[in-house]
Amino acid sequence: MKRISCRDLLEGGPPDDDAAVEGAELTRLYWTVKQREKDLARRERYWASVHDALGNAYQELEQRAHELQALREELVEVNAGLEKRVAEQVAEIMQRAGEIDALSVQLKQQVRDRSRELRLALDRAGSSDAEAPSLASGAVVGGRARIISKLGDGAMGSVYEAEDLLTGRPVAIKLLRAADRDALRRFVAEADAASAVHHPAIVRTLHVDVAEDGTLYQLMELVRGVTLRRFASAARVRIGEAARIGASIAGALSAAHAQGVVHRDIKPENVLLSADAPGVRVLDFGIAKHLAAGSDGETQRPHPVVGTPGYMSPDQIRPSGATTPAADVYSLGVVLFELIAGRRPFMRPRVEDVLVAHLYAPPPALGGPPELASIVGACLEKQPSARPTATELEARLGAYADGVDAPSADAIGRTSAELVEAAAARESGPSSGA
Amino acid sequence: MLDPFDKRQAEIKLAGYFVDSVARAFVHLHMLGGPEIAELCAGVEPMGFYEYPRFAALLTAVEKRFRDMEPVLEELGVQMMTDWYEHGPGKQVVTSGVGFLKFQTGSEGYRSVVAGPPAAIGEFVLESLDETAGAARIRSTTPFPKTMERGILIGGMRAPGDLTYVDVDNSADPFVFDVAFR
Image 1 (tube, rainbow over the protein chains, first blue to last red):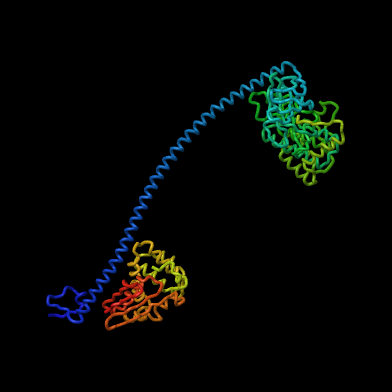
Image 2: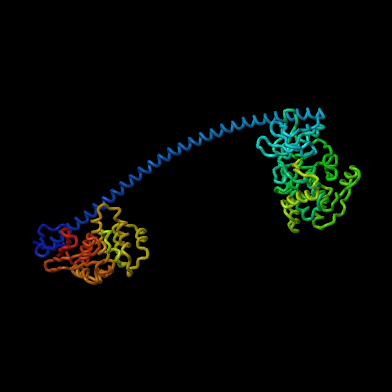
């Protein structure tokens, strides 16, 4: 019999056949085995718990996987729906585009028809030497405006205060007094030009149409005020006021020039001072030229001399000259000269001499502040390219006016009416933007 | 697990190395990863004392993964004491299983890792010890999970390696641990 220890038995190899554990070693073996049983049971409980937790985690992962798969399928479905909707919207857009094309063609046809009507009206009016009808209060023109009272006669026709039957608002309506075809053409050109430009300092054209009797009429906003001519006659215009008024006119011209429109007849009669903002308004684009027009050859053919001789630029006078925005700057220069000096730069008994002076004579020296005289002198350059643009002029005159603390255009507009009324009570009642 | 409504928890603080040993045991058991421990034990110094939530956060992080937390807590207690003996100051403090029993129930044991009002931290009292018979009885009124304390007793008594057998039974009364050892 070979006695071995508990450790030999548990940690060594298989015991020999005659090996035996006895006494204390046997007791130790018993407790060791018992401990191992306890440990095993404890570990088993522990691992069962871990196994359960892992099972839970696995189940949770599977659940997540299912949820992700469901989400993916839902996204695929949503995506398919989106694609379908986008395709439908594209188809709808294409359909709308087709409709817009058709509408565009239709509108072009309507414009052509309207132009033809206007031409026919021009022909009728041009061949009849008709005078613009004199209308009594209450008469309705073209189903659009009810006459209230006559305001006066403009360059192209008679002007009335009327009620716009469409809006119920007071308007000015100009009725054509057609002496010839060119006058009619200018009337339409004025309407075209004025409607192309939107600026607070330009009197807006609201509507141009042909009445049932073939009379051409132009609806404009009604502006109550006095012309710069009347203002200058009634009161001495201060230097700063002249600069401010000039800056406002230049601003309006700048907007017109940006739209390709040249006024061609800037003069004190075509500038209105109004108590309503912005105080200074340019009106009567009666001989305006639209630079972009002329595809029909009409407006670009060798031009008749148009404008008012005293304010006409050399470029307008030259038979071969092209009228550009610089022509308006020249005319504004004459207006400024007149406001500052109290007289135009070229005053001659005969019109022909005035035109020749515009072409060749240097302007007389302008008194007053040298800075302002320099600005006016630049405007009166014979070469169009040597003159400032309307935008530059607006900036320079504005800066000068600010520098001398000149009143705002609004303030001048308000004061002008009062001055004129105070100086000459002979004329009362509204003036209009025509 | 501690009763979350036990108001005593708000009054006790735990030694940093206790919190740290709990965390290490969880890592050893592969129940928490390094980054989780780093986050849960950020700023914990071994000699510092920390509010109970530090410990509760560790248990909560593990508990949510297990339906039956009891075996885990028991194993946690065993692992904590194994680490404490093998890698901590255990070897310097105790040299035998019975020595651990005396240490743990003395002023340097439980009281060294838990601070707070006596009523809050409770007691871990050696009520009887018969070394010849290999039997002892401990009464615990601490706020800690009793299953974890059972694991602590098993792991702590077995760690020195002088005992062949250690069994701790509190099935009759969770607060009374009957220890059998050889």
